[in-house]
Each structure stands twice: as C-alpha cells, then as structure tokens.
Image (tube, helix red, strand yellow):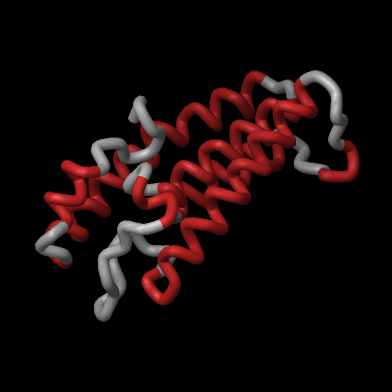
Length: 143
C-alpha cells in the first residue's frame, strides 16, 4: 500500500495536478477524457463492490464475489481506473517523468492483482470460473 501511495503522490506532484489550470485543447482534452473515464470506472466499480470495498488486496471476511458492473469486463477495474487517471495527470503535465511513473503502475497493479487473486481464489470457490469468463485483469482485450 505504501508503494502505491508513493507512486500516486509522485505522479500527482510531478504532474502538478491543478484542475483550475487544465486546458481544453490538445493534450488538455486528452487528459480530461482520461480522468473522466477513470472517475466513471472507479465510481462504478466502487458502487458495484458496495460493502466488499476495502483498500487492502484481500477480500473482506463476510464479502461476496462481485461480477456485475465493470467487473463483467475486467477483474480489477479499480486498478484500471487509477492507471487511466494517472495517465491523464501525466499527459496533462506534459512531463516524461510523470508519464514514466504512470507506466510503472501497469506492472505494479499487475503484480498486486496476482497477489490479490491468490486470496480471492482461497476465499471464493467460484473465482477460477470467473477468471475464465473474464480473462482480462486490467484492460479489455489487452491485459
């Protein structure tokens, strides 16, 4: 969790996240679209999880397996939302370092989701079948 917070903070600080200064031309438009997509996906995933939502990569003890909302498309849409949003911040910054840091989120969340999935398999007997139905962890048709 600490690594994740440090990465996100670095991207935001380097990217100078200042919503008031966002331009709606060129890269500013792309940044807004990505941040908007991230917000929609993140909120939809949070609402789908409901009481199952936790900041930790282990399922809540009395939780239920969720397959609705964005979980029908990818297995870890919250991670997808963070990656997409941070790419928006990095593009807005027009800074190679923030873009590079945003790129590091992909292998980071891929590894974190591997850890999480081991716990999901232990907690939910139907999780392996869900993994077959929804083969992508982060990006439909890609990852």
